[in-house]
Length: 90
Image 1 (cartoon, one colour):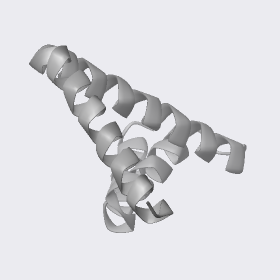
Image 2: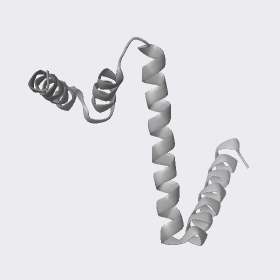
Image 3: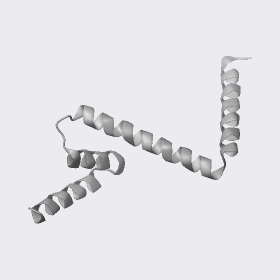
Image 4: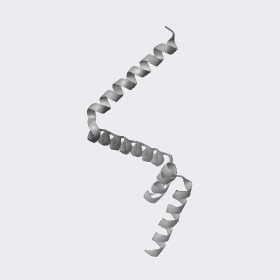
């Protein structure tokens, strides 16, 4: 057996075990897992933004997060909204 076939068989076995595990979790368990993984990824991304931009305040981090996840256009709109909100409350 060549290495490629062995690799395909191993990958198929892993996929099967993951699918079985997900089935055993049930819908509620799968949702909890998805939410936990999403929160963990957001924490990691925010940590990376903070490390790369230690001088950013909370608003700048929020704009950076939006740019990372949703794109520059939405981040720019949010930044403009924040600026206007600060001006109104000053």
